[in-house]
Image (cartoon, rainbow, N blue to C red; front, top):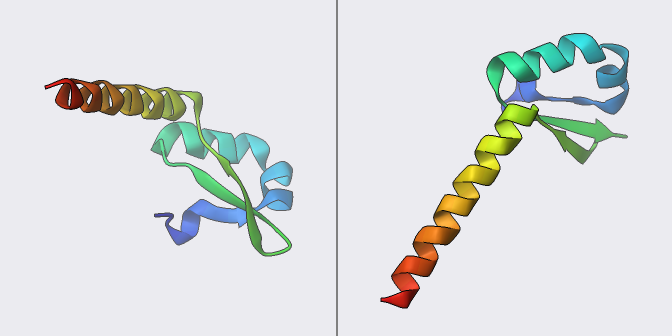
Length: 69
């Protein structure tokens, strides 16, 4: 779930990219970017992305272990 402060326009992100990237790194929360008021892109820091991938791999590994029993 996105917090209201984690939603913004792609245009605003482009205009304030450095500050927005700093926020992504600092909070670890992704940001939902909109185009013409519609959700279009999710941006997140590399560290947050790698944590997400590691969590997904762990879940997949646990799922496989359970199904092999």
